[in-house]
Image 1 (cartoon, rainbow, N blue to C red):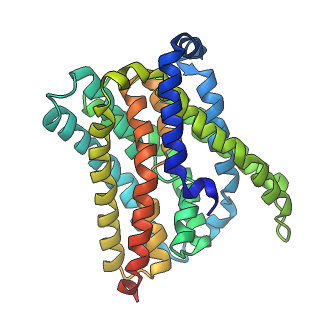
Image 2 (cartoon, rainbow, N blue to C red):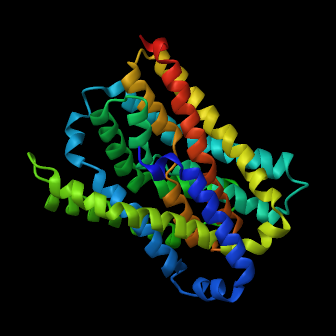
Length: 338
């Protein structure tokens, strides 16, 4: 685990601080960046998101899918959690907190946008960070690769319908053309580009070229993430300075969702009799969110200054320390699965 991954929460916190300070000092510069749009897609943010997502997609080895039948129980567990449970519990928690418990603290329009951001986080499963969580829990690396590959393929077809359904149920107008464009831009194209790149670089008996390429791309991926976070919080700086409690309000239901989903997955894994090196990564994959995709889609659907975009970025801040705590718990309870 590299220095960046280990202290991701610190780097993100620094990027947030820089964004808020810069946004309050140079609002005109951020307004100029916000104006670079085409078809509801901010060009600057789109490039930065691509810098994040593309290297992750290159890591995915789709030839591993042929091994899908070797350990089906773990795969079934994550597919059920990721696509049939997690999106719906996230929508429910969003509605419960921002239309109920926190209704007096947030205006209705902003509350609706927060719910939308939470839904987009809930519908976007697992990131490349899952490989880190799997490694830290001594998970089966090949199995993790199969899991991520299958979930990415499902995401191409399931993300837009489920997101559209849940956004519609919560009375949010769904711009379907923008939603579908976002899936093509931020899932399909990077996935295909990643697969083509991997095929060109990777040799069956020599992974040197691929590993060197990933090593070169890693700093750009980090820059993309931190620059996106800084820009988003810069766009939102005035709101955050006036209402810093917004981050806390968003973080509470996100924390409940993350720990709750992990508990469901972990208990189910134990009941299913999975080995720990399968159960641990399966539960991490079921719990983790593809926050890069959620951020990109929230911006495309609702705008850079929206509460939805802010909610997805708070998801970045919450996820890493929470996932590290779950890694610690999984390692401490390894004997449960022996």
